[in-house]
Amino acid sequence: MEGTKPVNKKLAAALSGGAVLTLALTGCSGDEGNKELDAWAKKVCDAVPAQNAKISAAYVAITKAAKDTKSTPKELQQADSKAFQDLADGYKARASLISSAGAPPGVDNGATIQKDVITKLTALSAAYADLKKQVDGLDTKDQGKFASGLKDVSAEMKQVETQRQSAVKALKKLESGDTKKALTSQEGCKQAAVASASAGTATG
Image (cartoon, rainbow, N blue to C red; front, side, top):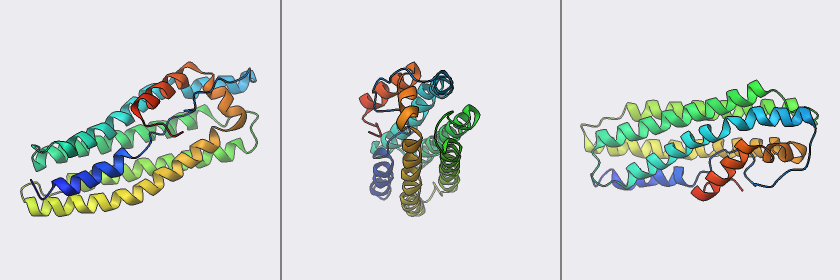
């Protein structure tokens, strides 16, 4: 397995440095906001803890698989494939959540900002789905080919990381001003903030 270890470690490093896209992670308590915006925030925050748990677990699984020196190529493939699928599902769910919640009421350019977040999260989900397909197609019976394939996956991860950063930036824009106050006052987002901070994955 010597041929796969270095490459899989690079794959893990590319993922482990990535923050989970959690809403309202600063943990600041908000002032009394308008009821419409608070209702919107509740729609968003109620589902955040479960979504973040799935996304966080996927990152942990890939890192764990990379560090397991006893894993066979088949085991690595299965672990990475499941993790990429969970990431794809997690970010797709986040996009659907923000879509169904609607644009934050009373926020300047709220609809435009919401649309940008949905677009970028959807693209990120698709990128992870493509990585899953790439991993699923690796030849686990030939160690050399498997290691080479993992190297390609690792290279692809760099591009996905750029997309992830873009999604983070869009989310932070959504989480600013009055919207941020409304989100941080919701229990679901408070729970997510605590969980992400303890896991060392907060976006800041």
